[in-house]
Image (cartoon, rainbow, N blue to C red; front, side):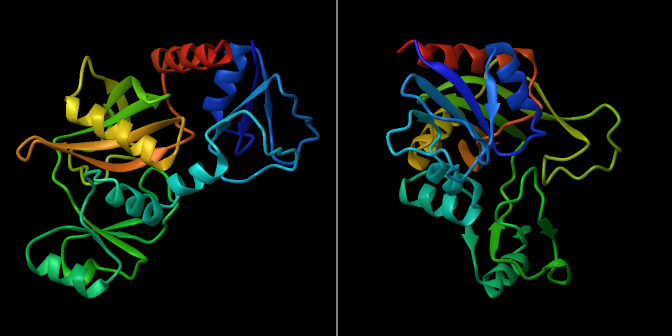
Length: 252
């Protein structure tokens, strides 16, 4: 049986601390004096950097190079496109974004390519709201947005994004992230969401990820928005699913 260590991208990450507490193992960081042994299994919780204790034959879930691909939206969207994964239409050309708006579309100006929880997105409904950005994506109308947790090539749990009870009545629904949004229980989700989540995780070379997916029921299409390699804010069921999956890997 392998011995787990949680390699965390930042010290105040709460979800990695929960997992380490339940597993009864240590969290380690890039600058630590940790010495890797061949009986260790490193669970990389969101770091795109090789630590100073790195070894080429290291046993690790989520290689840092795969995490980097996941973090950068432009890079991950390119990978998704090359692997026939359904994503929003995108461009780096602001004039194309102007054309979209003139055609009645809503445009996401993604000013920060590695932003989390919608950070760095400016929603443009008209030309005056359009701002310079390294990436523009066309808004995809979706009634539901799900977070699908994938581990070792299979979905292990899923939730639906919902408004908090204290959310203002006029809260915009374009970016379902932030203070007034939370993860809610979903008994089941469309099969298309599960399949696209698995495809996205595999395409990036990730061992696990929480994949944010919007479902357009009119088109019967599931659109991948992003993959999270350090998912947070999850409840006891999600935690239990990750613990079970990690323990299974420890015993392989």
